[in-house]
Amino acid sequence: MNSEKLFDQIKQKQSFLCIGLDTEITKIPGHLKDSEMPLFEFNRGIIDATHDLAIAFKPNLAFYESQGTKGWQQFELTIRYIRDNFPEILIIADAKRGDIGNTSKKYAETFFMNLPCDAVTVAPYMGSDSVLPFLEYPGKWVILLALTSNQGADDFQFLSTIHHERLFETVLRKSLQWGNPENMMYVVGATRAAMLVKVREIVPDHFLLIPGVGAQGGDLEEVAGYGFNSRCGLIVNSSRAILYADDSERYAEAARERALEVQLKMKGILGKRL
Image 1: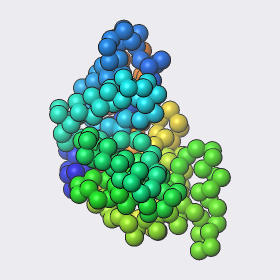
Image 2: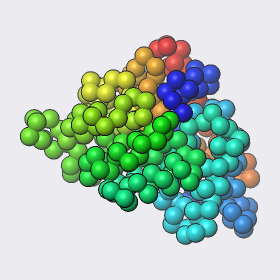
Image 3: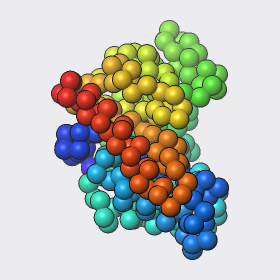
């Protein structure tokens, strides 16, 4: 999927919403827990209810890998269900891989050859060796961790470098040598919204994946105010606030209602800015 197709989705759906499928077995409705593939059944309900409101789905690998072989099977079922039924939607594997050499190549094969994912999150700490293998696949995206919202982000990301800039700025500048706006995006946490001004100075044309809107307290209007570019350039993720809007048999309906609230806000933002 190239940026033009992604932008077309944004315009058609009047949305830049990504729904994170951080599906916890302990939080899904009770009536699904006895099914053979409970995580997948839950995901299928969410996907069916919200696919016309979202431009992307982002399964977080941790919630599937923690369930062993059966969890991985449900991750794969989820990916293939989205691809087979809603091929226009961007599929992001939130895997945060960050190894080097042949290991990195095998991770890239996993998500881009063996699975029909469009994008994968990658940690840049080990440098280009961690990233370049993922950029060998035309039409696929690396989503590089740039500036995150967690408390521990202050341990490293704001340290001053020998270039007299903060480490996250160095990561952004250096990565411009590896990828381009057609194959690289960046993760920037919503609770760091004011820092989007600096991010946009360095990467004005790239898409940014913004987690943290919703349950984590990020403000959508603020994110758009700082991070919008001429083609929107934002993919804003919401997970728990949508997934767990209700824990009864009407969970999918409730998820749609919550997603619609976000989409309508996004429609208003897009109407003012595009």
